[in-house]
Length: 327
Image (cartoon, rainbow, N blue to C red; front, side, top):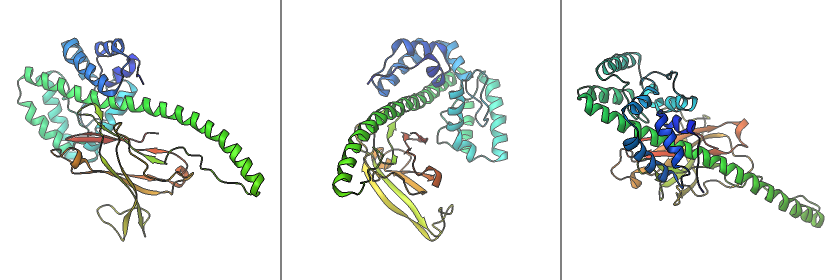
């Protein structure tokens, strides 16, 4: 399968128009890994100083939710997601301090403080800002370009994931049509022989799935152990910071394949049981020297959503991770 995107898609990944135009010219890409390899060459070899500054200017100030007017809608949404950990761990005083240091940084270097914020707390970002503030401008400019590339790689992974989800939907629709035709013949034959209809699940894949992308390598993460659990207790959801008279109940486990996709974690059922679910990844085994011994993602399926599909991917690097709800 080959992947092609519009210039606006690449501008959302990196605000440089030169970068976006060269990526379109280099299309199509055989894989995410191929696209990231080309992106690095273009960013560091083709894009000039003005292009770097143009890309920097598309980012909001760390700690601010509003994006610059030059940022695309997708870029603005991704920026919010990338800063979600920082914003969730912030206090009024830490945001104020962060704002003040951002202003000092911009005054010294002439551009916004740029950092791959995914998975980082406000205190971590603030400490890094203070450390980098002491750099010479030429050194800091190079570091900012490196951070921009990290952000670009994360967004390329999201871009490819969205295209894969669309392709999966098309494939799913074709498979559903095929199964519907076969099922109608089987049902008719069964009813004529026994007089009783036989139920066939409409789903062609489990209701909860995941995949893992190693954004530090720009490739799928194979061999990652995955565990799916559901919360069962007196309370409908686990109290924050305590078990609260309940427990996590095993639902299924698997190991990601060469494409980074998990095996079957749940049975094929029309409606998944509503509740709080947790997917855990054995990231410490996959990246022994990384920061996270394991990663757990907790999410809720409501009664009104029980017939929907939930794809919960993990975008992983040694020192950060992010996720989103796919389809």
